[in-house]
Image: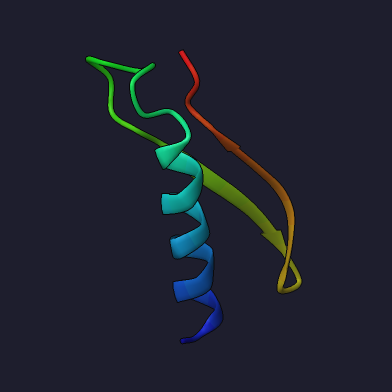
Length: 46
């Protein structure tokens, strides 16, 4: 698995944290990457 796949997988993991709280909005997870390292991450909570 390359780095982009790993970052996307982490986004999906983060998005799942919002399950049950965001309807009718979509589940969203995000990572901020700088020079190959995750320096920030978040998800849609409400």
